[in-house]
Amino acid sequence: MDKIKPLFTATASATGGRNGHTQSSDGLVSVDLSVPKDMGGPGKPGTATPEHLFAAGYAACFGGALDFVGKQHKKDASKAKVTAAVSIGPREGGGFGLAVKLHVEDKSLPQSELASLAKEAHEKICPYSNATRGNVDVQLEVVGA
Image 1 (cartoon, one colour):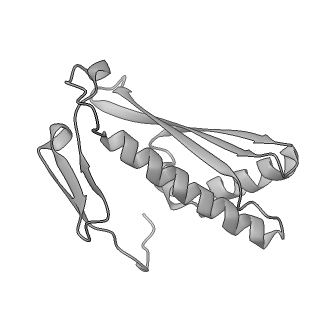
Image 2 (cartoon, helix red, strand yellow):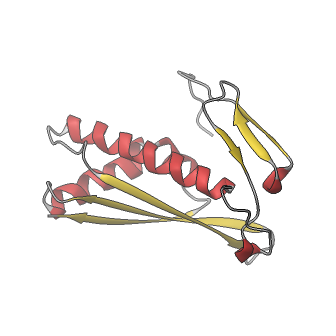
Image 3 (cartoon, rainbow, N blue to C red):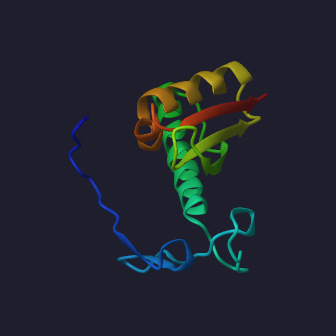
């Protein structure tokens, strides 16, 4: 396992698990949670799931990594829209697991250039991609000009 030199640490707490509440220590994130009806829960309106939070974080982080790689190659990928679809389900070996589909779209860059930047961001830069590699099935879909 690679060690890091922390530049920033975010802290959050959850009470009540998937049917509770989660909040960051600084109060910037404060979300009520409930298990969706698709998973046998109440699916309360106006609530989120841990998968919502993971998807939002991964999409934002990957967008930042893509922008970073773009700048290194003197390309502007700052307007790319990254959508992360995070699924949860039972694993073949028992328990539950996640799967992620990352959709990267930027019609201002040629398809081949955007695909190359996205591949580099995914394989070398994005901390979420590094953390999930080998543990979560992550599919990358790229749509450029």
